[in-house]
Image 1 (spheres, rainbow, N blue to C red):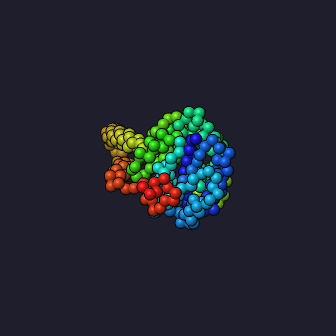
Image 2: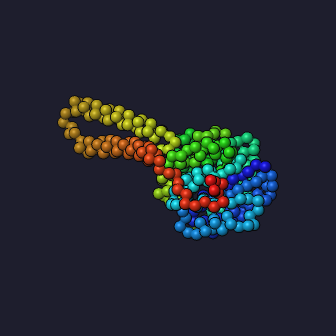
Image 3: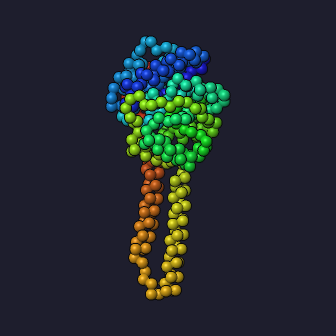
Amino acid sequence: MDLISFVIPCYRSEKTLPHVIEEIDTKMAEMKEYLYEIILVNDCSPDNTAETIKKLCEEKDRGNGVRRGIFFAKNFGQHSALMAGLREAGGDYVVCLDDDGQTPANEVDKLIAKLEEGYDAVYAKYENKKHSLFRNMGSMVNERMTRIMLEKPADLYVSSYFAVKKFVVKDMIRYENSYPYVIGLVLRATKSITNVVVTHREREEGNSGYTLKKLLGLWFNGFTAFSVKPLRIATVIGALSAVAGFLYGFYTIIKRFVNPDVPMGFSSTMAAIVFFGGMIMLMLGLIGEYIGRIYISLNNSPQYVVREKVNSNDEGK
């Protein structure tokens, strides 16, 4: 029998997580041809999520599923939590979903069916998203960024609810540097990816854990960790700016010869200085960001630090 591993990053979900687990157990009771395990990764949540995970892992009446808990020493972010869960997962299929109940665990059979058709990865697609306006805007920017920087197919919708085959997971967890970006790792591993339409629900409790700062950090991580296109774009902008500066200087000289009485414009000179100075600083900052990330990676900065595990595969090793 094939094993399905459910990986759930957890943050501020003490009230919603039991419902998600119950829904998985109920659905898997119908899918008797599969075994399953649930891996809960606590991203150092400030509420009682850690205690909730421990109780869920200790429950006796859990169907046929094994529950495992991973607890971070500090907050490392959703993608680091996913990487920890992927390394713990032993399933032939691995399903990643949210802890807030918005991603329907009872429709996991749709994702698994697509994998069994022959696809290597399947992303859930929502016809009617129930995220806030802020989160939807963030998703739109992320969509554009992955399409331009990571060469994601234009017709492929990516979300936090997805399923991949075991060989894709094995390739993903080879990435041990800082700043993991799961979407980039999937796109790097395979092009056999499709979508399946599922329901998107209203959030049961609380608000999204993604702040503007976290979203900006995620986007920046996405296009600096897996693409050199920003550097190439900076090179093109620099070349265009140099050409524009040369042409403007040539125009100024010609204008001076044609009409010597026209005073040289102080404001235009200052505007040019500010524009080109700003472009230079922007490009230097971008280069510095790449160099900084190289430096951090060379220092073996960890993706995450695990404080404790419950029911882990490697306990006792």
